[in-house]
Image (cartoon, rainbow, N blue to C red; front, side, top):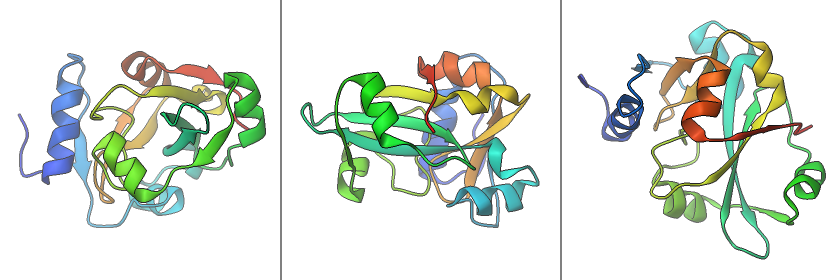
Length: 159
């Protein structure tokens, strides 16, 4: 049952509940907008933050979601070669239109429509990781294999 969550975080909790797993959104008083802020607020390493980055396929104009370890920078060229399409940076309006969430709180699930998702292989080394949950103050903890399961994401090298 959702208790006292902001509407966007409640939307993420509802999406998580559909998987029948014990995954709980928590809202923190400190900001989790950046990977460093999230790690500081949670008390984990920056590498355990699964940051959500939305790109746009240059030809398809479709969103591409990359879940990257908080310490990694996405090598767009490597990802483009892997997915056979050039990528463009997605602006805030595009992100909101396709996900239903604003930058700084975009979760890996609960989007308006399914989004092709790729997951940084570096996240797979941890027992637990943390992902955004709809607002710049909301997160949830999960195992990397669960992230792969709930997003139907493909694990790739992103750096």
